[in-house]
Length: 297
Image (cartoon, rainbow, N blue to C red; front, top):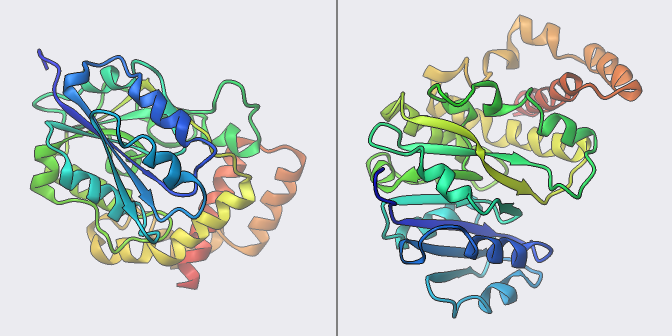
């Protein structure tokens, strides 16, 4: 775009008092014209001091704060922000993230008449030492980093924890599906609809950097992914049967799925993993957790 577009940044927070001040102040310091930038922060039913901290930011110009009395999930929280947005572009971040000062300029430089959505990169905060999950999470083995930056991005890699989308595209395809209230699924659902409407319109940028302030172990992440497999993967497969292969649905009950994801193979992987946590072993454990959850469903 020859002129910088107007942007609304939407960030839901839930029990993130440890990072909410850094996250908000970091966004307010973006290298972007103030008159073209606004913010919507959502307190999604937090039970810690998150709501109180956000309330103190409400008097800042260009900042709106929405309070939910109960936790509603990211889909509903983000939609609440979208509905009050009056801008050309809508940006999304998770509440446990901070971003580089040029984050927004990097994303806006990608979005044009052909590119309707751009996704940035997530990294471990520089002061933190990578654990076993981090070495997989921030490696080449995971997500959009495999696709490069010059090619259209497939929906299965597009996440909204660090993204920018044309508001007109959201008006065309609809907002987040609020029936997804547990971990995972709402991003994939919207990414599929966005990709189907604009198959050449999604991109990834490693220059639009965010830092993820949420330390988890492999076991904790696998429990979340098992919940996704049990609760939301079956729903996605029912809504989008045409994308069964991309959603890994063929691994749930097929013969090849039983041969690759079974108790014997899992025990073998865990044995090797106990010796050295290669990123591809962590990837297997994560996928196995999704498949296990889906089989329970």
